[in-house]
Length: 111
Ligand code: 5GP
Image (cartoon, rainbow, N blue to C red; front, top):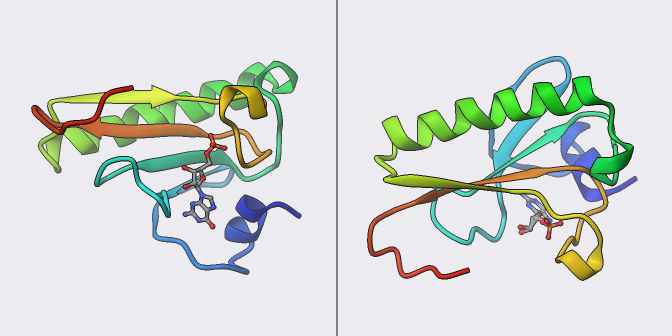
């Protein structure tokens, strides 16, 4: 079982910001910037090319809601939505996830 499945099963703690039947969103333990959220399907899929379209549609809808909250509640000026596939691409956790990262003017972060 991967670390995100343990979060889904409440075997390890996480700060959950959204949950429905299929999807979970929680704060990244090592945020790139304050407010960095991960959006995952409760069922493990990996990589994106093996993931059903309907799962991706649900995830991006939740990522959009999270981005909206980051702008309206946190006052973010912009948002990066990032999804890594494979170690070469920087993926650490083999469970599909979208990073939703709020951006603030002069936040000093450069990709
Ligand atoms: P990846 O590099 O796979 O695209 O991103 C994995 C993300 O998961 C990283 O940003 C990392 O900080 C986050 N992460 C890894 N382990 C945990 C954990 O146990 N709890 C939470 N909340 N985030 C985690």
